[in-house]
Amino acid sequence: MDSLPSTRSVPADPPAPTASPPQEPRRLSGNIGVIGLVFTVLAFNAPLAVMAGFVPLVVGYGNRVGAPSTYLVIGALLLLFSVGLTTMSRFMSSPGAFYCYIAAGIGKVPGLAGAFVAFGAYVAIAAGSYAYGGILVDTLVHDLLGGPSLDWWVWSLVLWTGASVLTMLHIDLSTRVLGVTMCAEVVIVLIWQIAVAVNGGPEGRSLSSFTPDAFTSGSLSFALLFGVLCVTGFEAVAVFREEARDPARTIPRATYTAVAFLAVLYGLGAWAYIVAFGPSRAPDSALDPSGSFLASMHEYVGRFAVDVVIVLLVTSAFAAILATQNIAARYLYSLGHDAVLTPRLARVHRRHGSPYVAAATVALLCLGVDAVAALAGTDPVTLYAALTGFGGFGILLLMTATSVAVILFFRSATGHTASAWRSRIAPSLSLAGLLTVLVLATTNMDSIIGSELGGNLVLALAAAIMLGGAALALVYRSRRPEVYSRIGRQDV
Image (cartoon, rainbow, N blue to C red):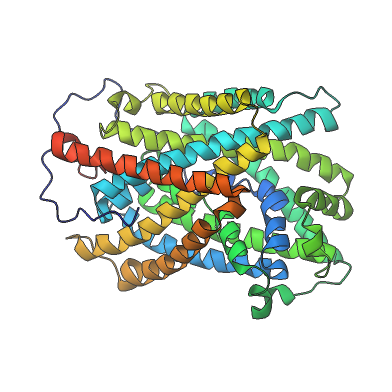
């Protein structure tokens, strides 16, 4: 996306179209505070699922006992990214997030390309999470409750019904649901971490994980790649700008809080995992990620905690789906508001103040993707890996482009000033780090997806979506300048 030519030299945009606005209120409504936004980020990350799945993978296939320090380094990198992101957000009035940042900093053509990639990424993550959630619900119903074992898509349909309805209601209801589930997840993870720290492991409480030698051991590239994919979602806080309470203050605070909390939570979680099995045995134990995590939970907290975790993994998947669909719906709302897509997508519910048409569209897209996969007999684990891998790569691509956008925005924009640290130094440092991880992701996509063919398809799909968005912007620039002028809609 950052390879697309800048359009900052394009002559002044023509005036916005005079088409009559939709009958419904044009602005979304809500009263989300810092805690509500943080819960949304945590839900997107699904911390319990990350602890049971991704963290052991970083230990087993990444830099092994150096995994805890990896999460702290990643946290520092993403905090640097957040400096530029939140500084630029002060000058952004639209809830378009990546879409608006890239449009304002690099140009409208790459901006619309970014919007398409962002929307595709979040829809893919939501659709993939339904497959994973279906597996988890079946495990809960059959293995724990003794009920029937059904196909994954049956349980996914149940999850889809609940999440889709909530996305069309007032956003405050979603944040309450996310708050309850996230508190439960974080509490059980913290209890386990404390139990391991207090009791120690078979080899004591080693701090060797935080040494430079440990950090650079094993496959550091794998660790950085999967580590970054664990700490995402915070970048989407800005899509709730119209629904946030005092967004100029709540969005930066929520962003920094979420990044720091996740980095520390996963860093300590990786350390607790290594201590629980011992530094010499932990990498081999990680070859069975979920099984080894549950075994550790059983040993240090008890059987009841394992049952609780199985239940919370289901609620974790549901919360992640809900958060992701909410984010995708607001990207679609922004595109409708800008008349880039049909203005019907910008309709706001009179009572709930929600983008109900956009939310319903996202829900139907997710249903369609999973329905095709189910009819084709696709393995749900393969589906989950492919879709979330594509989504994670798309977000990483957008974060890299946004770092470029921040630098160019403050270099070229008049009347928008910030300190050198916020406008140039921090964004440049984050760009260097994110570009490194992006190269690792591109060259190791088969490791993320699980197959060389799948990796190539993901890269091809990302390129096609990006080029499609850019091509549409070019069409609007030449044939419908009144629509082109609205891309990014900071002047609306």
